[in-house]
Length: 60
Image 1: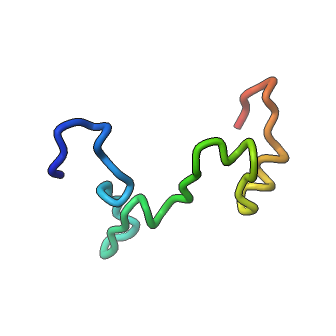
Image 2: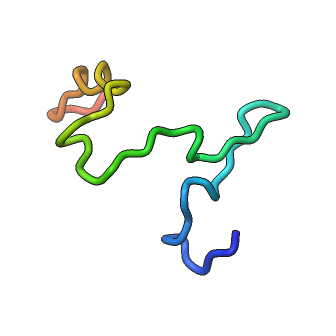
């Protein structure tokens, strides 16, 4: 990958096979957040999950 330390890895460097013929980078597959974004302006696509979250317990 051309890095000397794992902290140098970036989303575009990591790949995931999504089907037998397609590979995508993590930069394409995941929505990346800016620092503190969940505290200031969470993504609208996360609204349902955010509303259902309960900081007092962890369940799936």
